Each structure stands twice: as C-alpha cells, then as structure tokens.
Image (cartoon, rainbow over all chains, first blue to last red; front, side, top):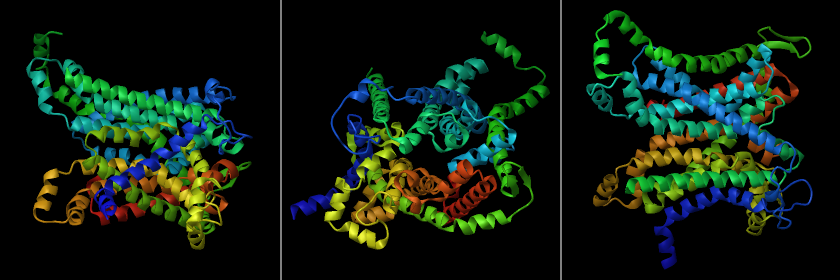
Length: 264
Length: 305
C-alpha cells in the first residue's frame, strides 16, 4: 500500500524521468557501440570490446573530410545567417514600417514548412538555372533556413530591452554609434549568441535540405546516411560521442562561468 | 568623437535626414529579405511552374498546364499521404503525452536539478540525429532485449494483431517508424511546453489549492489551460516536420512504411520525375497549411506568429 501511495505521489517525477531515459538511451547506445568490434560491415550487434575506433577516428576513407566540410559549412552559414538575421531583427523590433506584417510572415513561413518542400523547390531553382550543385548551393540553402531562427531569437531579445537605457546613453551625449556599440549591442548579445548557436547546430546537423542540394558533395550527415546503406563504421559512433562530450563540456563550462560571475 | 560635435551635427536641414531615417529599416532588411525572396519564395514559384510541366530529361520540360499530374500523384500515392498524416499525428500525440510530464517536472518539481535536466534534454541534439536514429536499429533489433521483453509479455502478439508490428519483429514495422519519429521530435515538444509552464505564476496553484481543488482539478482548470500556447507551439513544431520526414521511414521502416517524404525524395533524386515531385510537394504543403490553419483556429491562439 505504501509503495502504491509513493508511486501515486511521485507519478509526475517517474513519468518525466522515463521520458528522459527515452531521450538519452540512443546516446548511451552510441557511446557503448563506439567500443564495439563488429563482425562484418554493420555496427548494430555487440561483439567484443575494442578501442580501435577511438585510436583511429579517421580510419575510414572520406569520414574526416566530410566532417571538416560540415564544420566549414556550419561556420559560414552561421556567420551569414547571424549577420543578415540580426539586421532584420533590429528592423522589425525597432521600426514601424508598412511592410512589417509581410516581412513577419516571410520570416515565419520557412519555419512552418516541411523541410522536404523547401529542399525540393530550391533544388528545382538551381536545376533550372543550371547552377552546379556543391559547396555553394549547400551554403546558400543553409543560410536560407537558419535566417528565420536567428531573427526570432534576436528579435525577442531586442523587443524585451528597456528603451530608456538607450535614451539615457543619448542624454549623456553618446553618439548614435557609441550608443549602439556600448549599450544596444551588449544587451542584444545573448540573443545574437543564441541565434548563432542554433544556426550552427541546425546547419551542422542538416540532412534533408543538404540531400537535395549537395550533388555529389558529401557532408557528415550525408556520410552517415550513405553508411546506413553501405555499412556503418564504428568511427561514426566515436565522432557522435565526441560531439556530445564537447557540447556537454561547453554547457557546463558556461554554467560554471555564469555561477562564478554571479558570486563575484 | 566628442560630445559637442554630435550636438552640433544634430540640427542640419531636417527634411533629407527624415527621409534617410525612414529608409533605415529598409536598408537593414534588404540583404536578408532579398536572400529569402531569391532562395525561398522564387523556388516555390519555380516549383509551381514545374508541377504543370511535361517532358522528359532528354528533351527538356515545358509548361503545358498539365494539371493531370496532381490528380495522378494524389491517386497513386494516397496510401503514403494517409500514412504520413497518421504517423505524424500519432507521433505528435505521443510526444505530448511523454513530453508533458518531463516539462512539468523541470518547471515545477526539479528544484536545483533544473539546469542539469535542461542540459540533458538539449544535449542529445549534439550527436548527429542520423547516428541516434541508427542507434534505434540496435535497440529494436530482432532478438534484442526490447523485442524479448515485449515478446515474453505477449505484447507483440497484440500489436501484430492490430497491424502495428509484424510477427516477432519491431524493426521494419509502423511501430519502429512512429517510435523513431516520436524520439526525433520530442525536444521540439518539450522546449515550448517548458517555456509556457515556467511562466505560470506559482501563486495561482496555491490559490486553487486554498479553494480546495484536488491536484487533478488544479491541473485541469489551471495548469493545462495556461500551458496551451506551449501545447499549440509544440504540436505544430512536432507535426509539421514529422509529416514531411523520410529519414525514420527509410532507416527504421520497410517499403510498407514509406511516407510522402520518401516518395518526393525518390521522385526527385532517383526517378528524376520533377513534375511529380513538385506536385507532391505542393500537395503536402497545402495539406499541412490547411490542417495547421484549422488547428490554430480551434486552439484559439492566433497570436502565435
């Protein structure tokens, strides 16, 4: 009876933790199977422990090349989307103009559309224009779909900003440029950073839009997709686990730094 | 720059400065909006024209207003369309049922564990989702622990009877595809839910309890209605990408679980039948827009955009 009562009282916690387990389980599998030594080409069944893949992460042809291509794409796409998106966000948050509702829906639409529709239509345009698929078509596509997310993140931040701070700066004889660089930009920075981080993650991990617009260029997700047909090397688990570890370390470092700043 | 300079610079002739000031937002918008017009809107227009073209790869395609393509595509791929809607809707409901308790837990019951739990929800994102989807092949493998447990509890017999699984297998069945879809889009449900739950004033709960509402009543009359914006945003963020997804059906399903995304992908990249691919894309887009519009009306939150 006590057990039943305890379960009833903590039902939400138990259900929540079960969901969390469901979310984390695949990552655990990826980690464990990065130490597998499979028989044959596919790394789906456990055979025996080995650190081979960890000591030779680039041991599979094209794997590290695709990884570095994806990183380059993510950096440039983030840069492009963040600059263009921040400008739009400032225009939307700070100015009233006639085209505002139209611009708002144009920003919202790419986020409300299935990726496969955007992917196929952009590829149709490139085909009709006779543009060769490759690095540049992927970059164009990535900037296109990251843009809206940056606008949304930055706009929310700028809208919630107290306009009196800028008025105060101007009352203290700051020039418009000084006001922007010393007051506006630092306050908007967390929003810009959030948008940039999101862009990086979206671009790095994008598959569907890249699939349609890459031609024979192979990004890291494209490599993994291909390997699901040809045979999955253990090294993709190593890279997946390493990415996970780096991300968690970055988040923890950020939180530690934040906590320390609060204390001092 | 000194302060006096800026003060003196201010009262120049007012008219051209006003015009210039009114143009500022347009200059800010120009590059980004141009990008979206050229690489997002123009392609959709191009695709609309492609969908009414006929021809072949060798002779080229010409606009012939061949609307028949739409009808053919719709009748030939009806099962895939229905499957996409069914799988996406099931995955969305499952995401809501699984995600709500976790979002609630993080928002109200986590205390000092809140940040850690948030990190755990977001962190899986950083392992490429294709690798994580492939991990489900291991988890649901034939003769693996999951299949073993489901089998010994005779659950697979029931689900096979319902047509959700097949014999002693989970992989290559609707169950595996829906499981993958639910898994992949769960964070898109949890984050908006958490955002709207976290905004709820805790005093409202206290007030409800002071008025002798039972926990279930508090949830039904206070918490859930106030979390509606999160529910609406979360279901849209889950349903829309899930309906167009082809990765889960390809990696975890068999030919009997192909969704409309799979058809578009193979028509475009393998069969090279661009008109059919374009028509299917438009049908998918129209169906989703229609469903989303009705849903938003019903849910009564039009200030979502």
